[in-house]
Image 1 (cartoon, helix red, strand yellow):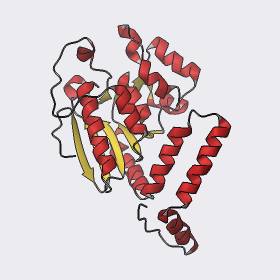
Image 2: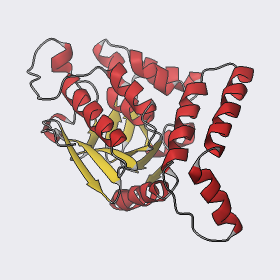
Image 3: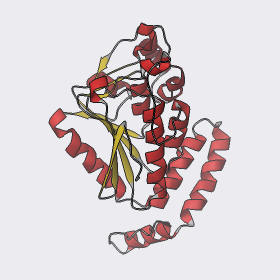
Image 4: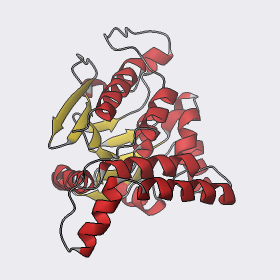
Length: 260
């Protein structure tokens, strides 16, 4: 995580890596540059044993208003020491990371910004945030993020958002399953970091195996998923952390995870 980033900030504290979309004057747009930097930072966190949980947030009053339209229109500069990346690369990197990713939604999450948010494993949002797939209003369609949204909410609500481009508030977003919880803006950082600390205290190898099994089996037919998950359970049970966790439970003490 030593690269010089232009579109994001990257910080690590107590095992929690915070990635901040850092173009607040443009409402933190997502483009090849910012996606490339996010992918680079995520892959660095994946390789770093001390990095346990990732938080993704936005600078200023917006999480992300979506795609960088200047780049989509063929204009704008995209110079960085980090190679650019596509949204497809970003989403596949997130789901193969093996470490929990939490979206800390400080403001509006729209279009591609909504897709980035939903792709995170958990979402905590400010009660002032709004959410929507607004692409239809500029003659576009939320193509790639359809795959994320329809795996989180029902078909009718997904199509309602996509066809109308309307925004919904945090109460409705939680009700339909777009986010896990909403809190007052002044409590967002404290609540989200407390959740991150809770996850960081779990066995890192079990989290990795569990997350990868979750995403690998989400589109399998039922019997095939059960077979794969049974193999996954055997893999977890063979770890030193599983043995330590069971022993700690029996001995009524806190487990000492080794990450293997």
